[in-house]
Length: 255
Length: 350
Image 1: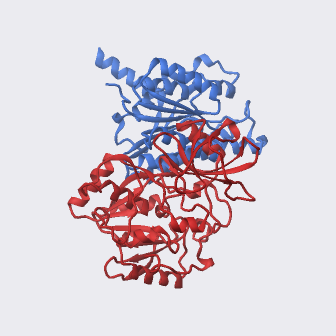
Image 2: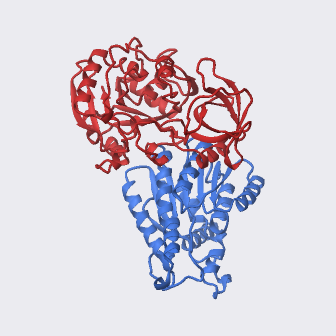
Image 3: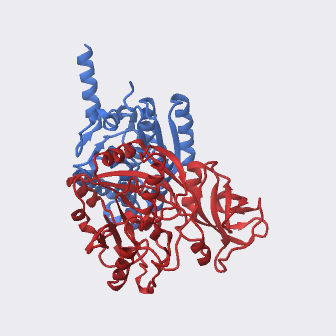
């Protein structure tokens, strides 16, 4: 049996990079319904066509939404919950804004960009969790926030992005604490360095080939979205370590 | 019936804004008038103490319908004049019932033609298929989009239905309960508006059960006082899932209290139990009118707002408590300056 059978999932920032890979892998793992959101509707439509071919049983809807705008988030959940008849099992808060690239030092950071990054990466997930809770409070659910090592170490030059991820770490811990007595689980994942358009824009002088492919980091997200992680909440995961450990165990048990 | 409950509501008792903007800064910062069904004894309390009036094993049933921004403004294709559409109810053939009027500033009913078209922004249009048999201005209409694509457009184009007593337009999220799920209500199912997640956690700790159903509410007014007094409501769409139905059956058979959060929940549960008194899961429509003569088969209590004179909701409440006791309580509520309507205070009848 596939690990995400019957699950109803919403993924933000699904048009490219990690979000796109999660949509593909979740559909392969049997997710029954996927609400995929991003600002770029055309890319989402291409992705939907791909999933319709590879996993024809999944109900996939694509929704244009900018996670820095509360009205868009409200509409996103209204549309998804209308399509899914009020059901949602998994929310992946993946959408992130990097801000200006190359990233300026804080001293020179334009205020408007600073606010947009915080709205997308911190306020957006906060509002998304509030919108998802009604569908999860009764039957349980899994919320996964995508964080970064820039959320636990203050790197010079990582500006608003790093600060927003510090906030997201706190947001995740606080939600997990407040929901500890419910069946709604909140965990957060640092995917590590990945070869994505965002990371290439953040570090244009680095060789992207040294970074992981998004497909190499999705294992922990599938684990957290599935019933395999029942009872797991309030924890921070490092995706690449998780994948390596799984591969190692698989190798050992298979040997 | 309406004579017993005729009273005059002073203008100052209309809740003009959400309670979180009135000073308490909290959605649960409203008053709670608790009435004992039989003795009529009134206790004046606060909503954040609701757990004090409930006991372990009580089952609270909520309406989890989400409020649509159900007021849309477009232009008639025939003469480009501005027209207002208030969505009232979604029908099983995927058409809608809607109140059609000239848009502000006139905001009055106009004779519309069958098959005429109204155009909105973003490429959305609607065709007026047929007028309602009994209610002028209500039309069966069909949009050019359907399903979640239509919901997306309604959210982009619409605004919440608002009546004169509300001081100014408020954002849609002020018209949602914290537990709202599937969109479809023309107006907020407001009895549950004061519940916070903190209240839910306290209910759970005390062993008070909760269940959720969906009834998409229609319009509470056709913007015509005479019509509002005379006419029953339109049929409303409701859905009771197996999870809720089995919780309700278990509470009923164990003799535990089933308390409806809102008149919509009473209508849905009593409709679902009409055949043999047993609530079964299903997706149906109801036009059930509950009066003082209705024998309630499922619900033992109700949490509701304070209702206007002669409103059909007062008839429904009189199925729980005698009209004389209700009248007495309402007179007291006016004297003590309780607030009315969707952003107002609450009344628990148990």
